[in-house]
Length: 295
Image (tube, rainbow, N blue to C red; front, side, top):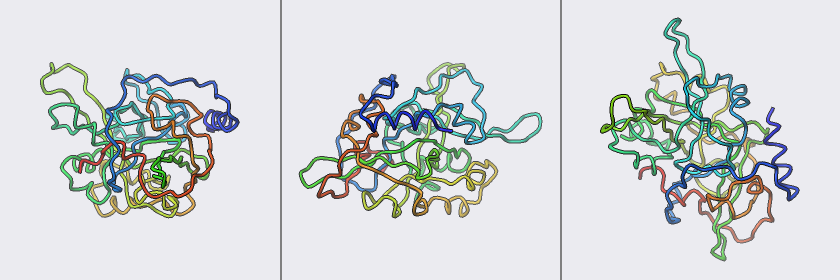
């Protein structure tokens, strides 16, 4: 199903461009110095599978609102446009259906005075997501899936350089991150001004598939949990939080990739091409380039 993704990766592995070019960005995300808090992660991922194909995989329809679809990107960073799967209830029948909708990555709480809160709320910790003020309303009623083709993580090696790794599903299917969403409108803008849909990705303690690269990972949901997670009428917090664990062993695979991914202006298929494994790696996260869980 995901022919575009596989062909582009194959071209990258052969040292050739996939004909994809550099994806346009509306605006570079805020530059934040690399920190050393190992609890923070999930600040870069790739999403190049076309929305129509994602919609088919997730059994969703494309949003019929007049909104631009995010461009394909091998280097999605906080504040970039992404897509998410939400549910929508029919006013006529009361039935719910899945909808693929554009979002801004970095959750802006409905009570926020401006959009700057979203610059750091691109991750939510599974351990506190149900109670933390920034996320609890979204956790209660606005849970979504955030699709990705893969995500980046890295080590800091003994020489002091940082080596990124690229993680994908072993079966080649899209990743489905557990996410939260909010709708925000500028309180000082006219009532008819457009609002912003924003989202955050939930992280949890790492499983064996992280291979010791980091002690956190994004929550990757399996298809059999999608309905439970997306159900807006589900207010069973123990049931919902029980889903927020590491993916089962064997779900993910990974390989070392070029350090070019550290620059958000680099955006091409070569970013996911394998490179030789470095020696002497120790834990530090690529995603610590941004501080993203509101701590």
